[in-house]
Amino acid sequence: MREISLHLLDIAENSVTAGASRIKLNLTEAHSRDRLYLSVIDNGKGIPRAFLETIKNPFTTSRSNRKVGMGIPLLNQAAIQCEGELSVRSQLGKGTQIWADFRLSHIDRMPVGDLAATYTGLVLGHEDRNWVLRYQVDRSVFYLDDIQIKNEMDGIPLSEPPINSYLRNLIEKEIQNVSQKREEGVFDA
Image 1 (cartoon, rainbow, N blue to C red):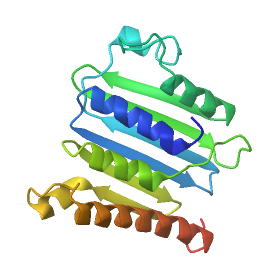
Image 2 (spheres, rainbow, N blue to C red; image 1 turned 90 degrees about the vertical axis):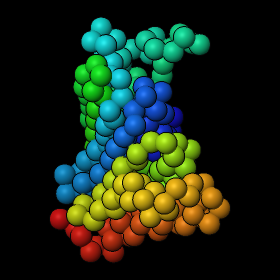
Image 3 (tube, one colour; image 1 turned 135 degrees about the vertical axis):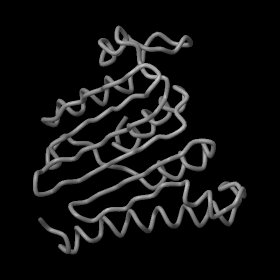
Image 4 (cartoon, rainbow, N blue to C red; image 1 turned 60 degrees about the vertical axis):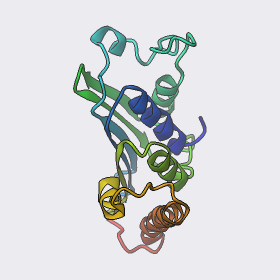
């Protein structure tokens, strides 16, 4: 994977597979600390302790259709390579929390990528889940809990073309606004 957003997508899809009904995705660019933080927190079935101890190994997977699982090991390697780390906590029946951080300015840090497409794809692709999305650059924050939108739509699927278009535009605009404030120096810490 060549982008942070694709790692978020991969981990979020694992959360869906684990039966999570609520999934929180966070990405924070903290320029004053020169750090990039990401996390995915879910309320899925959790990971057994024995499996959790080997989760960073690429030859460990819970899938029966293949013998390797590269998502978490690749993210772990990318974090380590950029003076960061990856940690995973999980409790059976309660869910999983995955965090990673990177030195933001590290020459080998992969780009964030198309975060708007990742967020939008997850929300529209899994409408039966509750998605909480948070993107922060220094002190500027975009926060979206899709429950609010779903309540406003009163049962109309988010995949309906006008709603789909509105949601895509909203997410793209808000992510761009957060990023632009940093570029303009509005929130330098």
